[in-house]
Structures are given as structure tokens and as C-alpha cells.
Image (cartoon, rainbow, N blue to C red; front, side, top):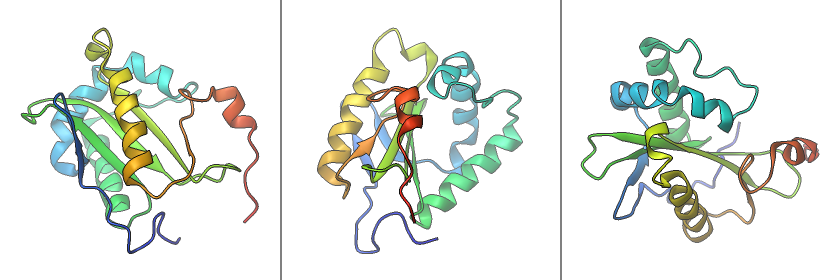
Length: 163
């Protein structure tokens, strides 16, 4: 598979606000990521309706998943960012930027915030910051946000581009 972005594109290392930092998700995040995922299982079911993740997730399987995300980032096939507190003490969520086959889109993005952060509106602020970041610092013309900017039913009906 070809890289998702051109080889001459400098993939952003991070996005930082006065509240959180996004940086590459790596195997070194496994313990804090596992805590964020397992404590947010009910919320995550709403992000990807019909999906089973993270049901039955073990720390070993989470380590494998993080290794996969890290390798895909390194090979420029997709980009998974962890959302951490500025002190790096807490994983607050994740952002995934992936290729798409949907007609009219050149990427799709997903994000979630830790369930305990929902009441303070972190997920909405994260979404706003990620939208601006993708528009400003990434080479995409039209990023789809399934389940957010476009509902799942409509997203699923968009035809795939012929390749």
C-alpha cells in the first residue's frame, strides 16, 4: 500500500493547547491508554456503533493494538494520536486520522475523550481543535468525521471511489 500522505509532507508531531497535547500513540502509553479505554467502554460504544471494541480488551491486546498504530504512523499509512494532559500523567482520549475510500473525501477522522471528561465538554473542544488543525496543518481538502459532522447512516451510504 502507498503511504497515506506524500513522502515530502512533514507529519505534525503534536498539537498542543492550554488544556491538552496530541502526540503519536506508542507502546509506551499502554498502561495509561488501557486505563482510559477500559474506564470509557460505555462511551466508546457510542463512537463506533455496532462495534465490539473494547469489549474483552486485555492489556496484552492493547499493547498489540498500540504497536500496530505506532507502526502505521511510522509508515505513514494512518495516524493515531494520544490525547494527554500537559503533564503527561493522564491519557484523556485519542484521535485517529485514516485514509478513506468514500467519494468526495480524502481522509476520515475519529476521536474520543475519556468518559470522565465528557461532562466538562472536553470531547467537543477536542473536536473543534482537531478540525482546525486538520484544515491548517494537513494536506487534506475534505475530512469526514463519521458520527460527528456526518451521521453514521449517511456516511455508510456514501459510495466508495473506484480504484
